[in-house]
Amino acid sequence: MKPMGSHAGNLWQVSEARVDLSRADTRPVRAIDIDAQPQALTVDAHRSALVVVDMQNDFCSKGGYLDYRGIDITPDRAPIAPIAALVPVLRAEGVPIVWLNWGVRRDLLNIHPSLLHAHTQDGSGAGLGERIPGGAEILRKGSWGAQIVDELDPGEQDIHVTKHRFSGFWDTELDSILRNMGIRTLFFAGVNADQCVMTTLEDASFLGYDVVMLRDCVGTTSPDYCMQATEYNVKLLYGFMTGSDALVRGLRA
Image (cartoon, rainbow, N blue to C red; front, side, top):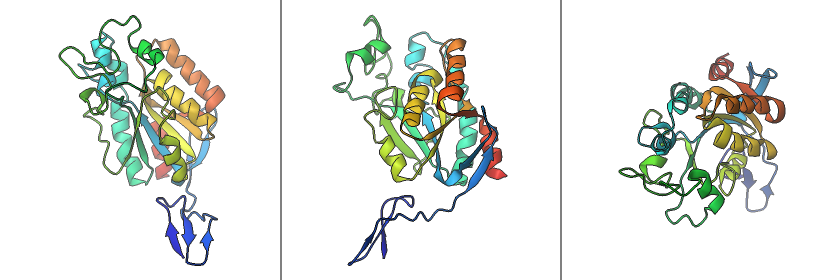
């Protein structure tokens, strides 16, 4: 019989006379233990992935959207170093990396007024998809603002998904990709923790994924109470929280 499928986690076996739909996963279970809150975790590393959300120039770099709006981008830059250290470790251990980023159409035909309002509430100044004076179009696919920051290496071997909502699961191929790969556990990193990271994490939980926020790998420019509420709700309602160091220790144990 011949395997048919794009990933080892979801293969048929086919021959001229028969098709085997049992999907015997060839990957062995690799259980790793991780210190986390509210409880310690055991996860299967072979069925886990890291989702890095919106580490883009418009959120994390001088001259980007948040900087243009006069917002201190320091909190959004804090996750850069931990993510940069974690990504090569996960690659070496065979854990997939998903880079999930804003990238809106030039004509904004799939963007509704409510989403435009969120980026410029009174319509003044450049908003979603519009050009910053002397700069790039805000979060437009292919623009400088939508590019991942220079300090992070997205890598051709990684998975790239473009989104145009706060949640990365809405009207994107993210769920289809993860299910085709047989992924069960998602580790979350990126910005803003209480907005795009949180809404994507929530939708992942609703879709049946196990979700873990990496606290040192997320940041937000929102007030402190927003991060406190995010941590509270992640641990109470949706999943778990840990640090990248605990994940690395678990992988290397």
